Length: 286
Ligand code: E4P
Picture 1 (cartoon, protein in one colour):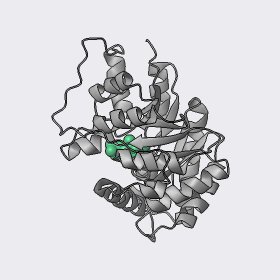
Picture 2: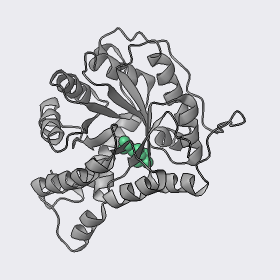
Picture 3: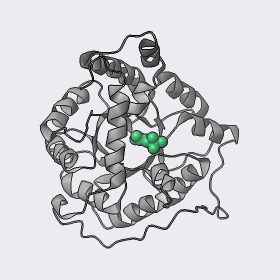
């Protein structure tokens, strides 16, 4: 297999999938997890099916075991661990979780949502030397805010534009990746683009064309890629989308993060969905 420049992460919550992907590709650069993926972990599903719902502490312990199993399987792109957040979660509640999770494994990236609370938590986290991955990003403005909030980070921060969920609402999700890459080409390189919500081989190949620094991919798509003998996009490759194009905006990366319009309906819905999937595993939902 010819390795692309783009680092490849497994998008999942089951170490068995990571092992399988590693066998197929020879090496895996990293992993991303989220509350929905953790709720789908086979052991957690078994517990719930047997009638054992978890306390909040047990849920954290299960999450920790999962990422501790995955951590040594992957390379330097690390393992992204997502804090629990709903619309009421404060910056300091996110930060407390982030600090604890960051100690679980040596290669942790803490995932905070692209909301005002999440950006504040990220700003404080990077000052304390933590690595962050800003999730539920659906716009160039949100990525610009991530850039501004994480200035001074010791190690590059990640921003995760969600391609598939934008496609789902009839927009061209890959345009957000393209626009953020273009905007960051004028920056200092402290934020890397981690393309997420990847649903097809075409998404994956287009991420290579756009030179996203990282892409997180469900194991089943990596299997599909392997089964086709790892095709790479050549000069004939054309990414086809029926989604409405998302235009590029000139934004000034030197502004404070508060200056950017970070509202996005899909960020709000994404938080709701993650919170609901997390709560479904709990005996006493928070
Ligand atoms: C990874 O960081 C994201 O949480 C994930 O890619 C979301 O994918 P989905 O939109 O298919 O749920």
